[in-house]
Image (tube, rainbow, N blue to C red; front, side, top):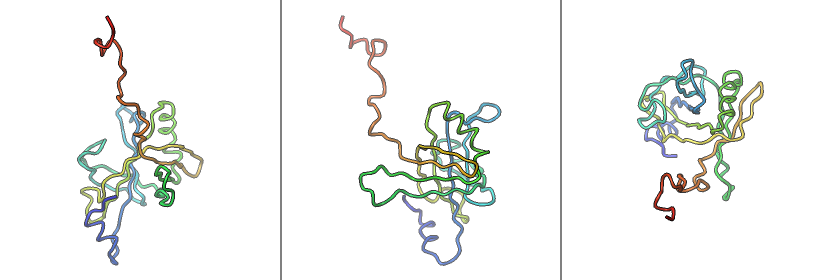
Length: 177
């Protein structure tokens, strides 16, 4: 993860600098009351955070958005396992009531849930202080205390290429006459 100069200074500094970790969950089944697509944005804090997302963000690019306070834990991939796909462990505490309707809709829809991890500094909320990290949630589990999942990179190695299918409608010259 590439650190901004301000974030590198914050990590190296002995003075108290507040760092905000945020996550954004996205899925086509996440809709508001008017059936418009929404993102679930959370900040690891006790108060909401108003910050600007990057100009190329998947939703609301370059806009000021609100992250709702909800405690979560992200555990980075194990650095020892050389052959394993890098995976993050995500756990969101006391969120089952808020998230379960969205997660249930996502499961019925059949598409994976995307999660973007961003870091902000209290002194600069105009942009994330690292390149945002976007992953796909797998193995989502929920109980009355928390929602947990494994977040991994999109598996581009096993995607079919080219994406389209060769058929007589799109490729008529491939059919023998």
